[in-house]
Structure formats: C-alpha cells, structure tokens
Image (cartoon, rainbow, N blue to C red; front, side, top):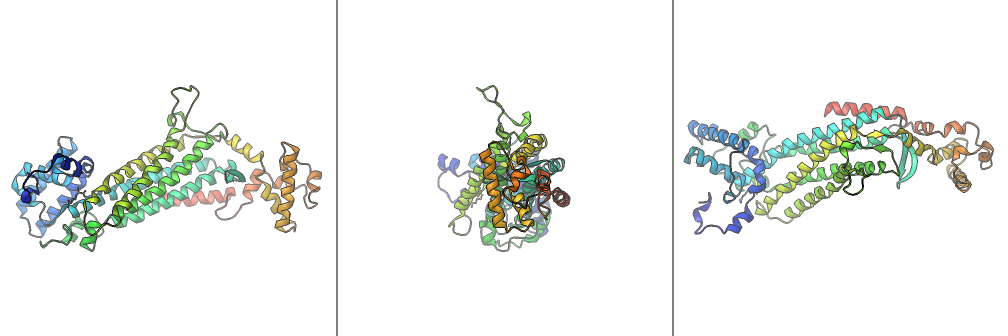
Length: 459
Ligand code: ARG
C-alpha cells in the first residue's frame, strides 16, 4: 500500500505511477534527504515531540540506509514515487513502525525544497572553485603572454593591437562577475524552508531555527507559503549559469577561430581535440565547439524553469517537480565544461609570431597616426580624413602598410609627419600608448594581473 493510500479505493494505474514518479532523477538527492531528515528528527527530539529512544532509533536507521544507498545496495521503487517516500519506506522496513514518526510535522513540500537547497548550496561552492581554477589557468597564460601582441577586433575586423594577455584578462573579469553572482545567490539558497509543512506551517511545537542551525543555514524562509512554492533560487542559479556559459561560449568561439588555418594564432593540444572518421588530416576543436553548443541546453533549462513557474498558483503544485532535471543537467553541464577548460587553456600553444605578423601586416596603427597628427595640432576629424587617404593610397599601391611608406610619401599627405612616426607606429608603441587604467599598455596589463591575483586569493 502507498504511504498515502488511506483514502483511496483502488491502486493507481501503472502508467500513472510511472508518469508521476520523480525517483528516476531525484534519487540524486538521497544524501540531502537523509541529512535533512537527521536534522528534523534531532529537532523533534529537542522539542520533546519524539522521545530520545524514538529519535535515536530513527537516526540509526537513517544512517544505515545512507550507508546502503552509498554502497549501491538499495533498490528504489517507482511505486514509492520519489526519493522522500522511498527513504521513508526503507526506514520503516529497517526499524519498524517507529520509522513512521519521521514525517511528524513535515510535508514532502518543505522537505523537497530543503533537499534542493542543500544540494545547490554544495554544488555552488564546487562551481565557484572550478570557475576560479579557470581564472587561474587564464591568468597563468596571460602572465606568460603579457608581451605577446595580437590584433584587437571590432566587427571581427582588425581594429587596434592589444596584448594577448589583455584579451585573456577580459575573460578573467567576466568569470569574476560570474563567481560573484554565484556567491551572492548562495546566501539566498542557504535558508531553511523546513517547518513550512505542506503550506501553512505545522500544529506541532517545532523550532525551525534548530533545524536551520543544525544544517548550517542562515536562518529560515520567513513565510510558509513562500517557503514551499519558491523556486526562484533555482531560476537564479540557471540564469547565473546561463551567463557563465555564455562567457565560456564566446571564448570557445575564439579558440575555434584562432586555431583555424586562416588564423593559426593558437594550437590546442592533441589531448583536447578529436579527429575525423573520414579525413585523415583533421584535428577538430571539439571540446570548445561542444561547450559553445551546450550553452543552448543551459539557456533552455532556464526558459523551461521560468515557463513552468509562470502563472502557478500558490503554494505547491506538482508542476514544480519539473524543477530538478534542468538544475541537475545545468550543474553537470557547467562542471563538465569548467573541468575541461582549465587544462585545455594550460596546454594550448600560443603562436606569438603569427599574432605579431597579423599586427604588423595591417592598418591597426591607423588610429595612432591620426592621434599623432592631433598631437601636432590638427583637429581629429581632419586627421582622420588624412589617414584615411594614406590607407587608401597603401591599398592602391598593393601590399603596402603605413610603415612601408617613405617619409616623402607620408609628407605628401601631411607636412606634420616627421621621422619619429616610424617609432610611434610600431605594434609595441601603439599598445603602450594606451597607458590608461584598464588599457592594454603592458604596464596596465600587469596592473590587471595584480588585481586578479588579489581576487584569486579572496575566492
Ligand atoms: N517529488 C515531489 C517533487 O519533487 C515531492 C513533493 C511532492 N509533494 C506533493 N504534495 N505531491 O516536487
């Protein structure tokens, strides 16, 4: 008979059991479910709702079940619907009818909300530490490549040269905000809903704060209806995860582009690439592509959760059982991506010469020629036009760039140009000219690296 079978006249249709059960996926919450129950029982004892013996029996039983589950010795049953009722049933089988006292003053509605929060608070810490490791891998590469110049792009057209480290640092700061968002959300996750009962609280003289203290939580959810019907902590996680993987997907896209024969800026290590079943020469950046691709499922999980919650009346509705798979999938997807990303970055080879060549065989110093003319008194708009003419002249000449022109050729466009222009327009001079806080001048890049070092120590 079902744990709730009392008012029913016949067994549930087999298909209904299968359809409404969540045990296939919420078995992942077994550990959290037991931990929550242990705290609940301890509180019931301290509040004299259960005797010492009863509580002791239940806690011993729960421990035994936890061990069996961890050892893979337990079979969960669809007829018992979910992890909560499976464990309660196991407990009753293990210690007899006293096991039935576990659920005193509790509902699965507050129980499942607690399990979800316990699960997420742990995974958030794991994700934060993985994201910090990736920051570290990027920072190490940036440290080594501080003097490596590459073209900076807008519209994927070469724009102005930057230090490669500067480019990597951009991602480190994106990840920093991702980490801060996860840390910030942790506080909201770490509240105890237990004691909200099914929706309205409980008639037993429980103390919700004992449970929250025992579980190391920062207090309780203040309103029982909110406690059992709120899943905004899940939405918040999925939204933060979406941003994180959006950032990763942009870096992935760049890794894919940079490792193409057209760019050849980097080479990903063989250990992080795969081959083709047909084309023997192929070495594909599959990991980067797949992380980029998996951003889709993370966004999908966010949309799915938001849509499930939209318009749901208070308090608990079975719809909310749909909160789990997307959350688990997102945790797994992010972990998989972050775990692979750090070693992929650490083992990547950087082709300094190729990057450098892309900087010198180019017009990405054109802004600096205009700025040079401005420093000689020409209004910027006029300087812009003069340099535009010079660029056009170079293009018409064939394979020429500004520094290939003779001084006489340059002077034919503006008399203000002198010999010192040849020094002012080298890649390194152009980069170092951007000596502004947060700019790409090499000393500013080192400043940023120092900031990152402090941030990493704090995380
Ligand atoms: N398996 C359910 C879920 O994940 C647990 C809560 C069930 N509550 C209920 N009143 N049917 O949402």
